[in-house]
Image (cartoon, rainbow, N blue to C red; front, side, top):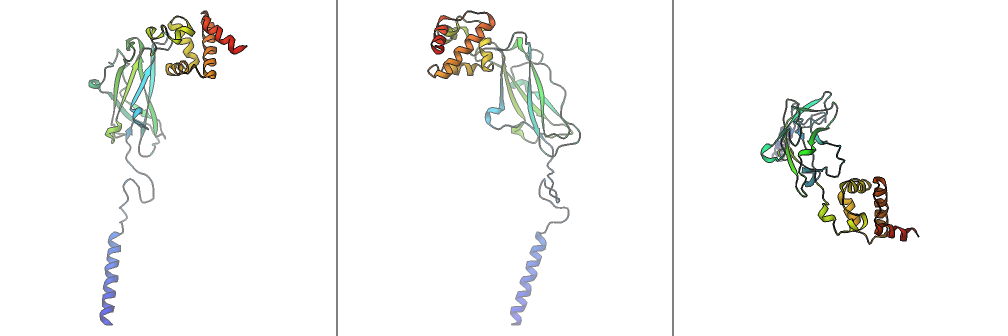
Length: 254
């Protein structure tokens, strides 16, 4: 009996010792979480990518009015940690070895640094492209690779999230050669940039959206709306309506 009692006391003593050794001291806390439950990760700037496609921002200006000589792209950034009551600075540099775009020729010089607004985890910084120097050939674009850099306010802790690529061109997807002897010419008449832009204005200046409409001429609703848009665009710029478009619209409107 006495032997059992001694073993029990020994077990209790060992258990107490184990529990004591597992308890954290007043100064210990889980990484980035303080004892009072607040998130306290270091502040680090990064590019947020929801998919692999987000790593490249593609800009095409060929469909825009000629009067527009510059275009500004606002690049989104985020930072980890808590929001600050004052602005937080970060830097951006150009990876010249990986870029074909050149400062002063294809885009304007970047600022020495940019800032997140106070009380914000999200921000942007602008990149302004110079239209006259950009590629105009179909399928070609100038490439600008940007890299985030740390400051005393913000670290750059994520290697894979520190770089982003912007491609910019001044070309068109649909060229004059593509237009000839196609449905574009049949329903719109001969190619002109003015005409093409007027029609694109009805499709959010999106060449793929217009191409998709021409690819679904068998869909009655899509075809009719395409004809209406072509008619409106050509009337707007004072161009004649092709006979094929007139006949098709008459059939719809009978």
